[in-house]
Image (cartoon, rainbow, N blue to C red; front, side, top):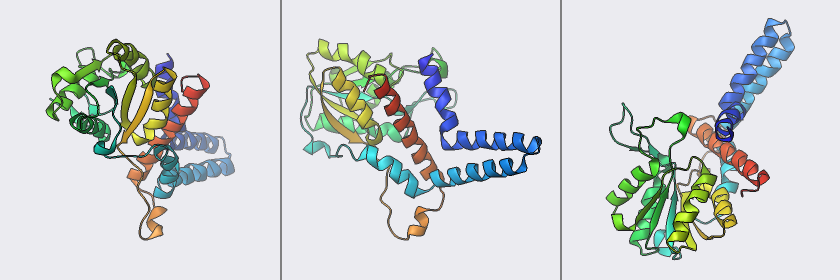
Length: 260
């Protein structure tokens, strides 16, 4: 139930969902003859949607997350006992996609392969299952698909481990822990998107691992050139703002529950 609610409820507090809620509330207010209230709700809906659609706001939300751990080339990374790669990298195989396809987060798999080829760890653990209410039983767990792609990128099968049951970031860590300990792993190179790293590092450290952050998939772009474009709305900036809000929400919830 926690997993289901954690996916459902926040939707109504993200920019698009909030705009819909405010729009419906405004329509109801107009129906009941409260025109000033309806107008105020419509203005608030438009302003918040515009604000979160600007590069200026998306950068302000992403930068504090992505700036906590430096993004380094694989060659400059410290060595560890294993590389742990968190899920969220692929589109699943379905009737429209005969093979798994890359998402923006697939940089995680590529960077893990680069770390392995640079000799930074002898093992690579892919962690991630499928969310039960958003997948079908015949779909392969994401970790298996990630491992296949890592093999294409040059990681030998003998170096690959998989954890295939987790459905969120905390489960990534909790279910990976016994696999890692079985192989004598104490120090890990943790690979995930830069915005996702603060929460992920905190979870693995709480489980007793020494964590070397290996961030990738940086979303925040510096604002260059004419500042007018920093306050003009764009779909990309709205996506980045929503991604950052999701992570801030997750970080708060995980800390309140003592997971991070």
